[in-house]
Image (cartoon, rainbow, N blue to C red):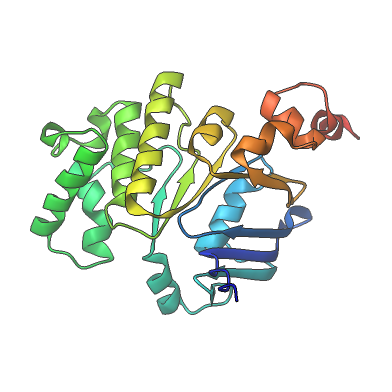
Length: 261
C-alpha cells in the first residue's frame, strides 16, 4: 500500500478578495509542498501581493480557506496566528530595513522580538547569517543608509533566514537591482532555501529570477491561477497568457484585455 502524500505546507482553496467593486482574487487554489520553491508570476496589479498578504494574515479574504501545516488561518485568533507566523521568514520588496537599527540589529530583530533571544546571542547569530549572504563583520554596525541596494537585499535576506524558518516568502527579490546583482541575489536565495530545507513562495514579474529560483511556477491572472507546472515546462505551457507574459510580447490576450473598453 502506498503511503499517503504528505500534507502541503500551505494550501489555498477558493480564496476571494475584493476592494469595493474591484475583484482582485476570484477563487485561488494553490498548494506549496515542503521543501518546494514555488514562484507566482503575473503582471503588475494582478493580485500577487494581495495573495501574499492574505496568506500572512495582513488581509482577510472574503471567503475561502488558507491553511499552513493543516491549520486554518482565516478567522484564526491573533495568538494562534502569531505562533504559526513564527515559522515564516520574509524578504520584503525594497528590503524594508529599519533605518534606526544597525545591520546586525535588523538581522536579529525577529530573534530578539519574536523568539526572546538575548541581544548577545542574537548578535552572534546575525554575524553567522550575514556571512552566509557574503557580508562580513565590517557591516555589522552600519546603518541601512550606508548600504548599496545589493547590500540591503543581502541584509534583508539574512534577516529572513536568521530564525531558520520552515517557510520563506520572497516579494519581488530582484526589484531595483541591476541584472548582475539580481543574479547574485537569485543564487543566494537558492542556496539559503536549500540550506534550510524550507518551502519558498516567491512573487515576481522577473522571468530571469523565476527561472533561477523556482521548482514550480504558477501564473496568476484574472484573479485565478491559470497555469501551474514545473519551471522546465513553462516554455511549452500551451497557454497563450503564459506564453505572452514570459516572452514579453506586446500583442496577445493580455494586451487585448488591457485595450478592451
